[in-house]
Amino acid sequence: MLPEQKRAWFVVVIIVIALAGVAAVVPFAGVRAWPAVGLFSLVGLAPFLFRPKLKPGEVASDERDQKILLGATLGGFAASHTWFVLACMAPWFFCVFRGEKAISIQVLPVIVISDIVVWLLTRAVSTLVLYRREGANGAH
View: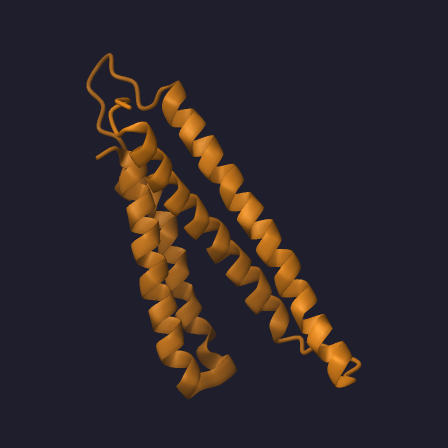
């Protein structure tokens, strides 16, 4: 398994664990459950944990790897942008129809953090799918 695939699996596992942790804490702590969101920061360890171990003369990645990662990143941004627009407009839509004049400020960090999670998760899953489709070792 390539280092990028290991990173992607690591990101998926951490996000699932973090979402489970947040979901477990929110019913009891409500808005004060923000420390549980810190579990998402463990994703930042992936580049350090899964560095490629190269022998002299080896390269870490080639054009195919760069193409896969670019496609996964663009897919992540597309999903993230779509989510961000929907997440911003949904509270406004519901508030307008309920006759409310303001949206709770508690919604804003949830939108931003969920947008980052959507980007990371989509990028990781896209990376795994694209490597599987292209073949882990360049075989089709």
